[in-house]
Image (tube, rainbow, N blue to C red; front, side, top):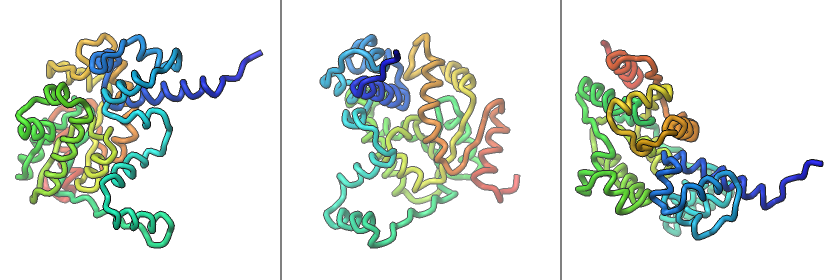
Length: 289
């Protein structure tokens, strides 16, 4: 006779899936999460498989290392909830009252302004060509090219690795959002290359989508890996022997978010010039070659 899983077993299995999803979304292997959180890789494996005892203290450490809240691991909420929650936390009493009116159906919701075609943001995994193609497109269009991560590094006088080591994922994401707000406020045309993990922060990604014409540069996992290896940097997977497996998990977790971009360009099998031509045609369709 097959035994039906208990409520506790179902809860642990769901918790494990959420931990695994958030870890992949952040682009962290189990090995990296273990190093950052100080939790054993074996415990993380047991947690993700829905087995073993769950310590709330260790779960809190794992959540902090991944730059998320422990309550987001415990409850399966709507994908829009983190955006609404973070907006409400910074809202005035008048704004909260307005939200209540809208949700109650008293007044229509306010629509977001359309993203401008002369302000473009490139998203996608590392190795998609955001920096290379973005720089070429900006040069040919005569506008600024900005790498969001490099702007953060310049503003704080620290490398991304040093910021992560000092302030953790959550600290880096706060600085990423602040820098993006700064770029949104700057006048003029620009092409911005965003970090691959920006989609993991709902409020920041929502701001990006609302303020820029967003383009997802995608490629096959094997091409992503080959390009990253050519760059000589496998961050954040390091020399993990399961790097390809982890990269596929990251891509699977982020794909539905990347797909929210206004435009998608597949660079698989393309050399730099044809890929740049596709990007230019997508963001400036009326431009003559």
